[in-house]
Amino acid sequence: MSKQPGPRMTLPTQLVLRALLAEPGQEMYGLQICQAIGLPSGTIHPILARFEAMGWLESRWEDVSPHQEGRPRRRYYRLTVDGAERARIALAQATTSVSTIGLRTRPAGGLT
Amino acid sequence: MTITIVLAAAGTLLGALSTIWVERMRRRHTQQMMAAERELKLAAHSIVLKPDEVIPPLGGPPVQRGNPAIRLRIGPVSFVLRTGRGRRPTGPTWGADGLAGIASFLLPAADRARYSEEYRSELWDLAQAGAGRIRQLQYALRQLRNALPTSSALRAPRRRSSAP
Image 1 (cartoon, rainbow over the protein chains, first blue to last red):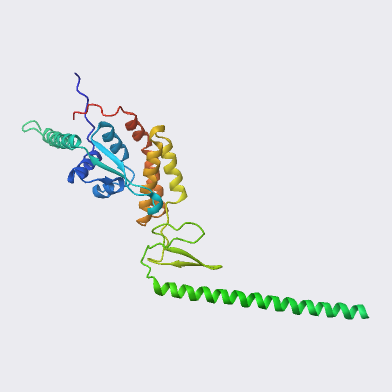
Image 2: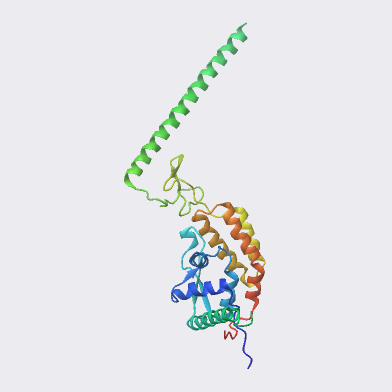
């Protein structure tokens, strides 16, 4: 059984996961996540869509009537139980690989 | 000679009648205005408007929550009250809204409606937070730029095995 490749852990991807993992049970909407991680609004939907397709995230519409509230409904995202566990592992591995790269880029003693 | 006198008299009479009619209409309008103002003052004493509080309009376009413009219609006279911060928070600008619509149109057909509403919701939140036309346009342009990555993410098979 071939192992599917995991998500590409770019910096925005890691930031989104960290924001969602900060309080795994809490639902957040897109702008809220952007504000939490300091990314410009409108940049995280590909990441959210990718994680949702992978089953790490689940989303739902806000339970309000747009007519009564006078504004469109928000879309709330939350990590699934399985997704939260996988996200923790992925983040740990991403951090490890970054630190490994950092060690390898150091000049080896005696060769410089 | 007689005809001239008759015509002059008729003209004078018509002029006098029209003056009386105009005066009567003006008086009636003034009375209506005074009555409406009196009712409005009574209403203002009985209700205390909070910022962003909405009174459903009697006729006219619907007033949305968060819009400090409140339209009151009392009798034949309508008033527009302003409450709250003094500026008129509105929804997204048409340009940003249109671009966000195009961005959602580039997504798979099954997801268009969802993302269209989601983008509009975020634009609305941005507008409510005080984002101007430029910031709203920037948001919509980012969505447009990210339409292809979002589309490819949405086309990926759902719930695939995703061991990191």
